[in-house]
Length: 466
Image (cartoon, rainbow, N blue to C red; front, side, top):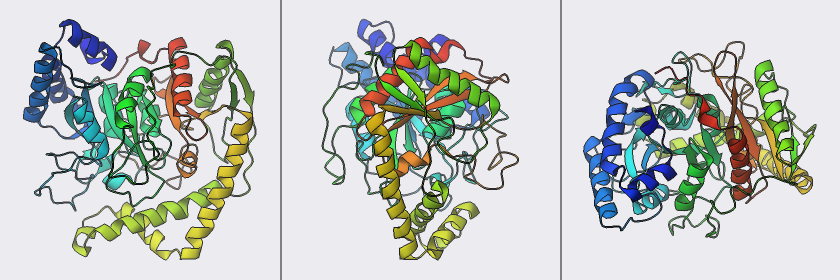
């Protein structure tokens, strides 16, 4: 039955169309799979079988009439527990939020997915308010990596990535404020796209400003593109969203990378230690684009100042601003690490914050100059493979960010960036390659990712340990 678990969304829709599978059959199968595997991986915070089956039954009736309602009718999808979902609580990995209240609002992404007939299979775990790069919280405990249950799936969309890798749903909603889609995608051998900021409408307005966005996670690039077609549709509640682009992100996705100019940076100009296996695997993956017709050049990036010192004041201030939404009584129930970040934010002056924002502008310009010469930039997604579950950071790292040097830059510059599975260590742990593009080049990033996927299918190997 693993074949059913790992069917893509596009394959499921074809089965629904020719009546060889039904949405109810798939939903029941996945609910059974959750009951079997979630105790091992702890990917889901909320499972509501009655609602899931009701959505599947409604989809089945539409398919029986030959009247599917949109792009994703009957496709099973998980929702990260930071994203508002009507009828389901959104607890954000926190004991400070009362679950006993009216949950009457869909975020734009869940509203669009609902309109397109998707079947919601549950809400996935996150560290409290997404503040960690691993997925564990006092509310939900430790989420584990299906490739090695002793390892972390990363964060903060770790529940989403672990579910996908376990064959529980073909699509997942993730969020990304500093790498939270791409990091767990790399650790769990799935695909994840952080969009150009503003391409996916958001509501309520994020207290993290232009750092964080919502994006698709999937086991295949084409599935992510299909989901992207739905979630990029407009929502009047987001007055800061980009003008609607009605392109079909599946169109041209198989056009390849011939004659593209691709820059490869093994370290993104950062003073970090890259694991030897990771370095070799990603370098080989990057160079393989030459065989696909692209021109790949190694580039040495030099930044005018320390990127981490630029990023952290903005990150800290965002969490200090976020906590203004909560009462002192609620704050007392929150994770000590989250509070420490907010305290750092409160210690900053307005001038500190604007100094970091000015540096951000300089870096944006420098990256734009790079993309005047190259169509895409490739780096490792992470400098290391997944480390021990239950730990906040890998061994031999004294802080929470020096081992996450490659992802947050593209949140600051608002550019699209994807993590693409590109191989395994000798211990069988997945490695991710990051593909970034200039602003608004989401379709190009998807196309390059698909080109690599066609040459190196992600799921030829499924040695997960569950």
